[in-house]
Image (cartoon, rainbow, N blue to C red):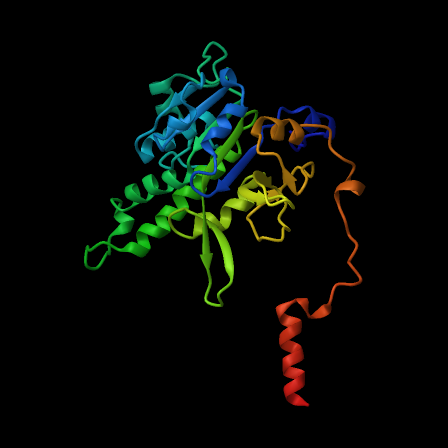
Length: 304
């Protein structure tokens, strides 16, 4: 038996799916992005029951009501994880139980999922709430000594559950999976503005950008003439500090808010590495622009 090495040619021939998150303030038009996707090949994972924005859209919908529903559907979509024990979610045993209920997703004769290229999950914010409500009823959410509710235990379990759910969906080959969520604008202790996804607990929001391929912020911008327009912010380095990430290397800093054309661009021909990666440093950048260098200057000034 040889090492299971995948050759470059085999890897390049594999069908790849795009996994991403789109964050934006409430009412910016995240759910309406469904209009930019082919209805016959898109499954709407409706957690918010907020489909008024897409009234008349001709695509299929699934409406999970509990966290167990979310876990079961993720197992059905992503298949079993051979690294997990039978008692763990997303294991072979979990997958077998789910396929007994829904049918075998890997069976060529079962077209329940075959027709869909994209799964649009609206929203990760509500998924986090369902997960936390479920966690509050689990043994880990109660103190071993007193038997009283332990909020820290509930939040710890919530982080584990959400990361496992997202990671399992991320490893689904051949499907595009997009999560949308609300983006909060906050002020820190130093009166600085920052943005944070609205998800229960802090662990999920911190680790989510490292799990998915694309993180997009859908926001309102203003033209030089003062006219407002919506746009996708796609690069981590942006002046406003929006959460963003482009693992594909194919997107510009700002893209039009059309998810269908965005996916076409991501799936397009890759630029050579020499064009995608930059290693130069701006010579005019002041050394004092970093907090550490500024602190060093102040320390040196005090010593003088």
